[in-house]
Image 1 (spheres, helix red, strand yellow):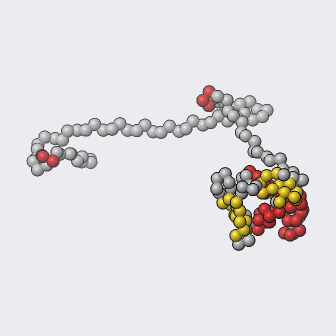
Image 2 (cartoon, one colour):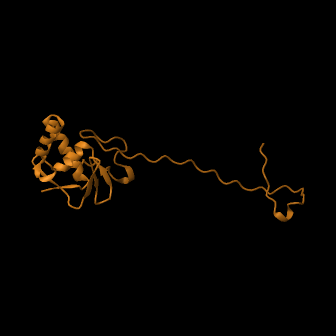
Image 3 (tube, rainbow, N blue to C red):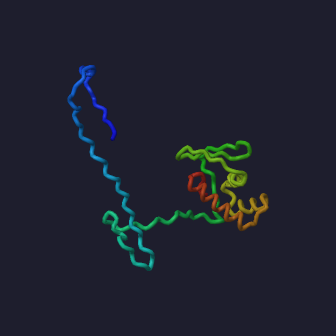
Length: 161
């Protein structure tokens, strides 16, 4: 059995008393935390909704958003934005995005693409140059260049002519 400490006022600290210390009420125990309610699962196409589907907070479940796909094609001509600050440091392009002042450092291939995006060349021309300089297949260079340009566009670093 554990012993309880009793609190004695400073004026009575030296005096002994036969009176038992007053009992204090225990704080009520905390109720266990409830697990968060599971979100309703949207129905699959061609299948009925499962048990409880669409009942979360009395509203139907929202469908997931499709990823944003930019409309760049291999014949698009891309410019570097004029308000983007960048420098070459030890052979790599270091770029600062204007919206959030984030710094991006590009590798050798990314830096070469960045240098070739002058608004005069198409993405296909840039990919062709990369295929020759880095000895990769033309189709691979085209898909990778297109993907990289779209990444730059999403960050607000380039624009079309």
